[in-house]
Length: 286
Image 1: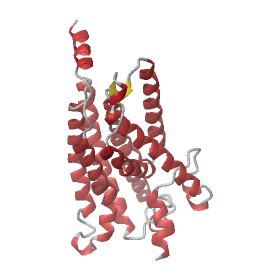
Image 2 (image 1 turned 45 degrees about the vertical axis):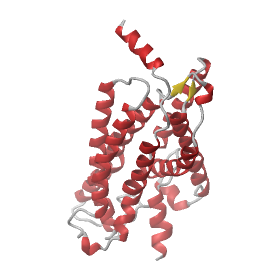
Image 3 (image 1 turned 45 degrees about the horizontal axis):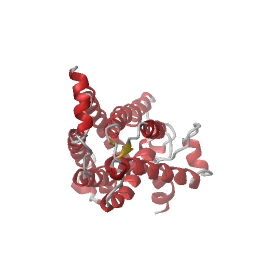
Image 4 (image 1 turned 90 degrees about the horizontal axis):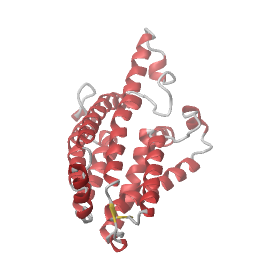
């Protein structure tokens, strides 16, 4: 009976207004603290952050690991629908753990760039790694790469997209007139979608992203049969992801015939990393 009452309460709660403040802060901190992290490491003088100490990018990452879970929790609290708290808490905890694992691995990886490490090559093919003695040291660097690119990314991004999807599931309204976005939301879609393009390509999480996108689309179609429509927040997420999908397709098409990147990403799904492209085609020219 109580569960039935809570559902009725959710339905009566109405549609949440567009969360301009949260989406703006969320997009801004994503660009500054995540995308801007490796750029800051290249811009700030190396003398200020010696190679045996945390870099400015590491401090950006630490701030990201604190601010992002806080914003996600704020977003969940504003969801018109009551979401399973236990699943939310476990997802947030896993997110923080995964992002922290990534912090360490990514810190060492970007510091290695100053020593000649090339992101477009595998660990064993890198000139500064392949001649290390004893050879078991190479295994240690591959373990570090695994923590950075696989375990860290999985524990970081799976709960991240799960939280966004759970929030998205509550962004429906029975009123067709409320299924629209304000001008500010439309302006935010471009930087938001562009950031998710970076996240999907650099994080190598295309499968997770496309699965989440199809799940969102399936939910939209399912709810439409019930005469429920996306509210402004749901539309913002949906259009951001649609723009991301378009940008990823254009990115892959542009680099489709690149022989070096093809060698590094030999699988069926070919989605090159922006920083691999940078070390191959940009920094190598200077």
